[in-house]
Image (cartoon, rainbow, N blue to C red; front, side, top):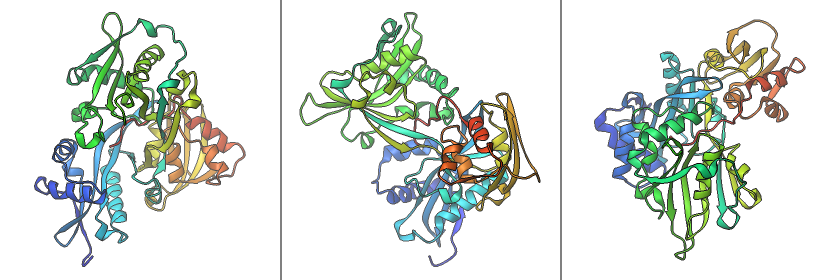
Length: 409
């Protein structure tokens, strides 16, 4: 770069360039439909662009989300649109964007937590983000699609619906999951129809999306699925691509799963971004036949540590002093007394001796109740000073069901 970069939000008339930079950085071509859709979701005032002189060379943005955490929901900065042109990599631009972004979030004081999906899992740890959930991709051969019988599943009616006509019902089913699974985000405004967007550029040869409901006799929607069909080498070798599947109970899940795994003229079904404790694997008679591929899911960063730890509840009573190191956001560094139970929590600075010590990345990884503090300690990433304190806090942080973020933003 010839000069120190200028970093600022973009104006509406700079969006096309902003979008082009990100598509270039990710190796994508121009896509007018995608660009128009992304603009609907974009919060221009929360974008950041880095300029080398007059040239826009790097991007970042935030979506204003409400995220489920154990026992509560919390305002969350959804970090997105992060990219740097190939000509400007390895010159500190990403660090400067993250610095400005986290400073802005902290100064605004609205969101104690930030979260993101990473293109590569190793990028954001140095900025204090920890992998807080895992996502699975499942491939189930049709020959191995037999399910355990679930009482009540046969009582539900399966019905094909027009996608645009079922948004309210789908959000109600989604919200049932959201109320109980940390990591899920409230669908507000244009996000309510996010799951319907599946342009040709995203399909990789698959059909447009189809939508199915599982309903009770009186028409109550208990589950929905959005799926497509991808042709194979022969006409009877297609794949059912399940993009979304949410259910309010076991019978509804079983009824919908039976349909998704047993489509005519297919050889397999794939299910996208499933939770770590996915009921699909429990319902399969032969789970070994399913190919399960684990990937990192949502990464979480505690921006205002005491506010974040006080914003969730704890599975069992806990009272410990944690010493936290946070080089990137030094206002979080120090000793904090965390006291909580299933009804609420407090977190305040203290001069008392620490029971355990860890980095903010490890704390972010455990914040949603998925990865355990004990597991991180076994890996040498948490230091215990008071015997039993790691286990005490680990148990208190844990949550069932497992955290899940069912879509990438």
